[in-house]
Amino acid sequence: MRLVEIPKDSGGKRLLGIPTVADRVAQTVVKLVLEPEVEPKFHPDSYGYRPGRTALDAVGTARKRCWATDWVIDLDIKAFFDSIPHDLVERAVAHHTDLAWVRLYVGRWLRAPEQRMDGTRRERTKGTPQGGVVSPLLANLFLHYAFDMWMQRMFPRVCFERYADDGAPRRREEEVAM
Image (tube, rainbow, N blue to C red; front, top):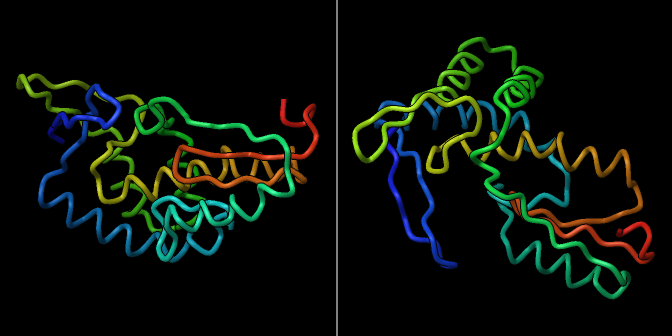
């Protein structure tokens, strides 16, 4: 996987991992196989990188809910794509498919070394590259268990909207929000 720098709107640079053409095709096949299995199970308040859902849908839901809540937490997971634990993603994938080839390819893509712009290579121990076809689906699958289901289990009365690694949990009482 080749790394490419692109400028961020806020300044600085974001690294995108560009897969080979063969990997892009294979990732598309895995996405087409895995997405129908996991999509119906995703939390209704998860909006990012999902078919038929947009950022405007998340904003619309937040707008409706804002009148019923007084406290909102602005949540942004720093360097999220770069810090996703491989073992947890692989466990989530295995939970949703028994196809050995899907699990094998996902593991290979997660661990594929980065080819830096100076030509050097670096092994990867965590993260899923931004720029991969299947990366947004894997990120949502990870956050489905690590955030959405955790929120539902630990704070069942706290509503939230999540778009990828950005979220807005909200509640009427301050102590619950804190």
